[in-house]
Amino acid sequence: MANHRASLLRICEIIPVALALLFGFLPACNQENNGRDGGNPDADGIDGGGDDDPGEPFLLIFDPGAQACSQFMIQRTAAQELALRGRIVFRPGTITLPRDADSFSAELIDEVHLTGPEPVQAQPDGPGEITHEYRQQVWGYRHLYTYTQAFHAGSRPFGIEATFSFRFRDGVSDPDELTFDPDRVGEEPQGYNTDYTQVSILGFLDNGEDYLKEKQTYRSCTFSSLPSYRVTAGLEGGDTIVLFKRYLKPNMGTGPAAVTQAEIDLDGRRRTVENYFQTAYAADLHNFNERYLVVLDPPIGDIHGVHFEETNQNDPPTVVDLLDADLAPSGQRTVTGYVDEEAP
Image 1 (cartoon, rainbow, N blue to C red):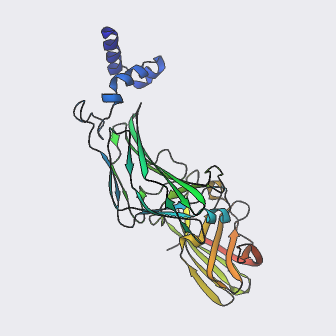
Image 2 (tube, rainbow, N blue to C red; image 1 turned 120 degrees about the horizontal axis):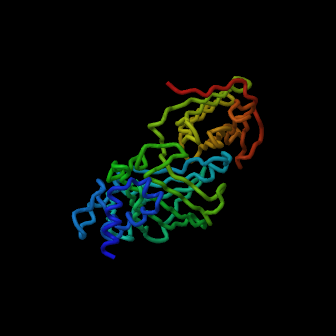
Image 3 (cartoon, rainbow, N blue to C red; image 1 turned 135 degrees about the vertical axis):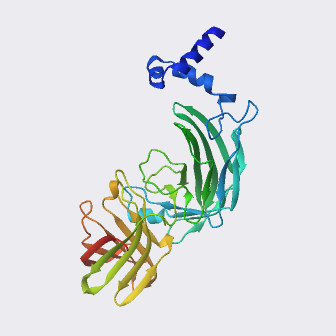
């Protein structure tokens, strides 16, 4: 048996990975190279300094005001997106993530507010917990830390599942710490169809099964690092709607986007809306058929909100819906001009 293992080790040293895959040697190579208890290399891919040294822990750093907000997911209506608004406020401080722990309790969250346009504060059902998984892979390794916590928002159950990933791939290490602040959720915003993200935060209302009504994905509340765009809709009679959005144009897939401010001029009166829970953006794959909804508080006369959407994938909208107190269409205004452009 000793000779057999030694032969396998020599093969692992001299045969390229591709050839090892072809002839089935790779599982044996991985098993031998895993190190202590399945292997816990340092961030540089080397063992922490012996069988009893797992290496320095990873860190989650939460600055004061650190937050994350539920953002759009393709194919939903703007009204569905409004109903799935959510904001998480993190507890300031630093969380250490040991490389050799299977699970441990953790307190990451101070506040959770859910659903628009009038959010409900969720209450925790118990402490949060982090579970740790280590994966040895062809290109290196990955440490996955999954945080879960249960809440209730009024009569509705709510759960959070956040995954923080640290990896060493092809000789390059991810940072050993992730920083969260009022604008950034551990890393810079990326497209929705990416090969790898270090942070994934999901929310589940009720049973958490209905994609259109119960599932959330949390990202930056501000997208401050993304380009700013101005959407201007001219209406019959000289009224205007101006929206400001942050948007990352996708090379492929779908780009993150969110309305950050709205200026609504109707019937000689203006409302400026900056409240996250009173605006919604929706779109389909590749950001086609963009849809917008803004709630007015206080209303303009009987108009409590406005809604409009592109047609034929990305053609301008033809009408703006005027919404009543239940945010249901109660009238329309014809769109006479429409511009969607990057803001200076």
